[in-house]
Amino acid sequence: MTQRRFLQLDVFADRPGAGNPLAVVIDAEGLDTAAMQAFANWTNLSETIFLLPPGEGADYRVRIFTPRQELPFAGHPSVGAAWAAIESGLVPIHATSLVQDCAAGRLPVDVTTERAIRVRAPRARRVVSPADAPARLAAALPDVARGALPAALWTNGPGWWVVELADEPAVRGLAPDLAAITALTADAAVGLAVFAKADAGGDYDVVVRAFCPADGIPEDPVTGSANAAIGAALAEAGRVAHGGRYVASQGREVGRDGCVEVQVDTDGEVWIGGRVQAVVRGTVTW
Image (cartoon, rainbow, N blue to C red; front, side):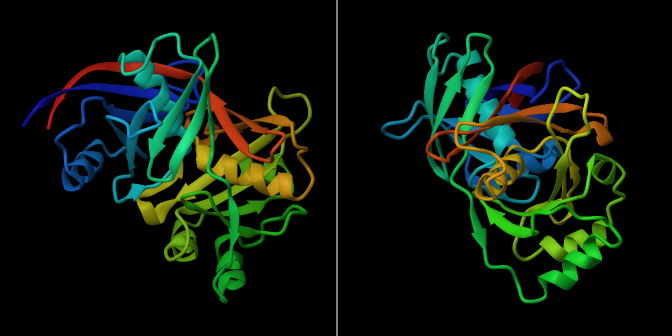
């Protein structure tokens, strides 16, 4: 067993206690995959990350685990990884652009002067859905008013069912049938993401919820990869222009009100970003 530096962060958060918690093991050399998975299961957070020396052309390397599996990419772990790499001295403290090395490839990262982090998500693409998907979708979202965008299965590393609902109250008031969502997502996706245009008068444009019961996470507080998939779907539909941006609200229903900044750049790539709060600093022996 080795003592290693450790952080617990709240990502996409304007204050501690908001956003999505993330466990960070900074000095992860020497841990094999089984040890990382066991630690992620022990923390029992939606994701735990391990920072490692980078490959050529990158500034740091990260491996991302849920309590049950390793992911090639996830949004709030990627934003948190960049923040932790700066905070722990793995990269220069005044860095404004970085390259993250992860299983999904090398991803560019922007850092603002206020230490907000923005990561380019892997390019999302539609996936052919199983033949019985319409019936499973209907079972997962019975009697729920839908929006105009057709439901579709998207992947940007993890797979997401992306479903637009009619309006913000439909999203906020959704009572998820976790067994039906498990049946929908178990063989093709990490979860189901529902969204809608926000009601007028708020400080956000889109409202989002994400459910991952097949991965041991009934409702994820704030989900970068799901927001990136939604951004890609909206861009494909012509509802977000290249160069456009918007703010998504997620997590309020589980007491973790978070804010995700989504941008579609001039090349059509989707970036996700937000603020990070350090809640726990210390060491862990594993």
